[in-house]
Amino acid sequence: MQEREIAISVKNIHKNFILPQHKNTSLKQAAVNIVRKNNVTTQKVLNGVSFDIYKGEFFGIVGRNGSGKSTLLKLMAGVYVPASGSIEMSGGLTPFIELGVGFNYELSGRDNVFLNGALLGYTRSQMEAMYDEIVEFAEIEEHMDKKLKNYSSGMQVRLAFSIAIKAKNDILIFDEVLAVGDEAFQKKCMAVFREYRDNKQTVVLVTHSMETVTMLCSRALMLENGKVVTIGDVKKVAEAYQKSNLTSGAAPGQDNTNKLAKKLISIAGNKPAYRIGETMKITLHWPISQGVAWVGVSISGVNGEHLFSTNTGMTKITGNSINYDVELSLGHGDYYLAAAIKDLDGNFVDAQDKITSFSIYHDYSQTVGGLARMKYKYTIPKKK
Image 1 (tube, rainbow, N blue to C red):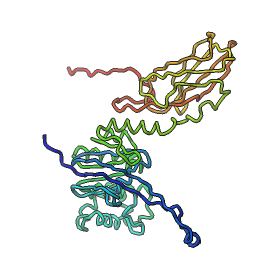
Image 2 (image 1 turned 60 degrees about the vertical axis):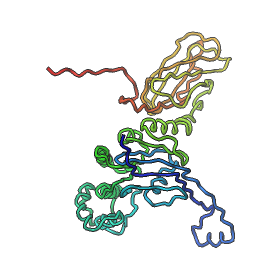
Image 3 (image 1 turned 45 degrees about the vertical axis):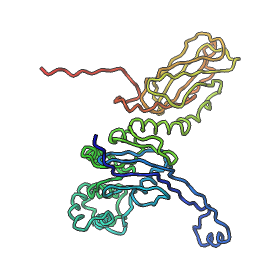
Image 4 (image 1 turned 180 degrees about the horizontal axis):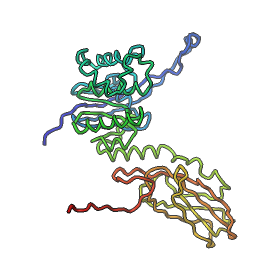
């Protein structure tokens, strides 16, 4: 088996930032702080990160905010220098890591094309050969002689992205490029990325969109607290990222639990997240003094969509608790669980429309969308 060529090799990278406790934002503060010791703290951003990216690979990097993604990309692009470790590149690099880097807002769009080209190592004649294609892709021909400071943010994005893809190198790095621009521009970016993937262009993409990762990337890694926690199969990385977001705090709306009514009902056994089709097993409790003859639960979407409800009917319930098992045939997303109880006369004793909230994991192996999971099949008629 032929060994794959390595495009980027990251070996045991460490990166720290020294942060002063006091900032001098004026001459007065500087004068006051000159006699005061300005202690500093060290923020460890990357801690022993190692991985390889192969030539022709569309590689994804994911992680929550503060995980070290942008710092890692800036190290790979040569913007930062690591505290220790090494990064080896095989081929030229074009980074698209931050909107506006390399732009001069007092110059025209035309001048900025050549300025960016020079920063990327291209000669003027090379950029002249690319110029028409860059402008055509950006769709801002009539604005190229205007100063960049008069461009909208969308126009700036289109120009920067056009330069990056037309003046492309052996390796391309993109940081959240699909998070900016309008929908039409994002579709255009996606079409370019698909072309890169099909043509075996080496691309490194940082994104919070797990759909983009699973759709485009051949491999991915996830950073957490400056360390690689998983690398390899894109679906496993996407699931790890999703779990990390869910376990980093309560599910959306969790702080509304038991705050909306008389608070006679309490809940136990609920989890913050479930897999598609998993059974939710919960126990509802109420004070022993309440005579209860009816207990109901319901599930709604975060926008108020009524998805499911059931109840025990007017059957006297002995004790002060009930167990409910509900099979969650729902799509991925966030949901609310409601609960209510009635007394022996049929009057509501307590009703809580958001007793808890929960999420359904995204199952990236499925091709079914929507809030509900329904059984279906399709057939392809044979040609006559």
